[in-house]
Amino acid sequence: MTGRRRNRSTFLPTRTRPVRATVLSAVALGACASLVAGCGVVRGVTGGSGDGSITVMTWAPWDTNATNKPGMPAMATAYAKWINKHGGINGRKLKVLTCNDHNSSVAAAKCARQAVQENVVAVVGSYSEFSDSYFAPLEGAGIPYIGGYGVTTEEFTRALSYPVNGGQPALLAGLGKELGPACGPVTLVRPDSIAGDDLPPLLNAGLAAGGHAAATDQLAADDATEYSSQSTRALESASGGSGKEGCVVPSLGDHTDTFMDSFRRDRQDYPAVHAATVLGSVDQTEINSTGGQSGPYEGSYITGWYPVASDARWDPMKKAINEVAFGDNRIDPADAGVQTTWIAYTAFKTVVNSLGNGDITADTVRRALDDGVKVSTGGLTPTLQWSPRDDNLASVGLARLVNANVTLQVVRKGVLVSAKKGFFDMTNTLDSADLD
Image (cartoon, rainbow, N blue to C red; front, side):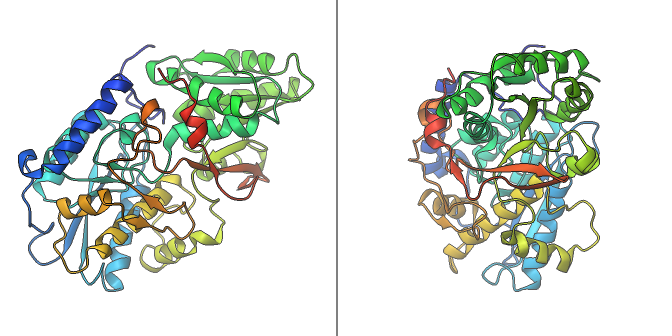
C-alpha cells in the first residue's frame, strides 16, 4: 500500500519524480522543443496522408476491468464527423485516430508510438494514467498533448503538455476553500499510497484559505470491497468538537462510490455530518447509477472544472452530438471526460485557424501554442493561453497549469446543480500549498 503503480484510476496526481527535478526536466524539454531539428522532428510535413487533411489522435481506456473512458474517443470521432460535415477546420478535413491504452503502461506507450508513426500533429482530449510511458515518445517527435484529463502531475509539468483544466490539484484546493467557512471538523479519506500523500496538502491549502484548520488525514485501502470501519471512523472524527456540521471528503477514485455505500448506511447515526468530494471521484453518471436522489451523494458538495451539464453553454456540444452521434450511448454530455474532449478540440480548432493557410504540423501547432494563441471556449473555461514562460505555479511543481478555475456544485434531487455562480480561481491557493 505504498508506492506501487496503480492499474485502476485513482484520479490522483501521480508523482513519478521529485517536483524540483520534474520542473527542471520541463525546462530542458522546452529547450529541446525550440531546437526541433535536434529532437527528431521533421519540419514542413502536414499531419495526415498527403491529401491536405489534418490527423490527430485521442486515446483512453475502454473495455477494461478498471477505469474506462470510452466517451472520450467517441466524442473525438463525433467531433471530426461534425466539423467535417460543416467544412472542416479552415477548409481542411480532420482525421481522428483513436487508441485504447487499456490502463496499461505498455499500451499507453504503444499508443504514443502509433501517434508518432502516423505523423499526427497533436494528441487531443485524452485520458491515461501512464504519463511516464507516453510523454517520452511524444516529446521525441515534438507532438503536443492538448487537453489531457489532468489525471497525473506530469500533465502540469511537461513542456509539451497544454492542459485545459486544473486537474485534481485545483479541485481539492477549491473544495477546501469552499468548505472552510461552512464545515466543522473535516476528515479526508484517501489512499494509503504515494499518490494519496499529495492530497492532504492540496485540501489543507484550500481549508486554510477558508480560515479552517487542517483536515484529519485518514488513510484507507483504495481496493477494498467495503468501508464500514473507515466510514465509522470518518463520521466520528467529523462529528466531534464543533457547533458546525462536520464534513467527510472521500477521495478514493473508482472506490469512492464503495465508500459512499458504507457512509450512507452509517451516517443516520451522525446526522450532523455531510459528504463532499470532487469531480472525477463522482459525476452525474455515477450519481444516476447509485440511486440519484435516494443515493449516497444527495446533498454533497462537489467541485468541478466546468459549468454543470444543464448550463446553456454546453448547447453547442449537445447539438453536435445530436447531429452526428445520436444514439451513441458512449457519449454522455454530463461526463467530465466527454466535456474535456470537446474543450480540447475547441482549443485545437482555434490553433489551426490561427495558422491560416500555412502548414499544419506538430511543429507549427506547438509554436502557435507557445506563442500564446488565445482560446475562447464559449465561457466553459476562462480564455486559455499557454506559453513556455508560464511560471505562476512552477514553484509548487505545476508549471503548465494555466487554468486553476473551479466551479462549486451540489447534488439536489439527484442532479448536480450550481451551488454558487461563476468560477473561482485557485492559483493563489495552490501557490501556498506545501507540496514538498
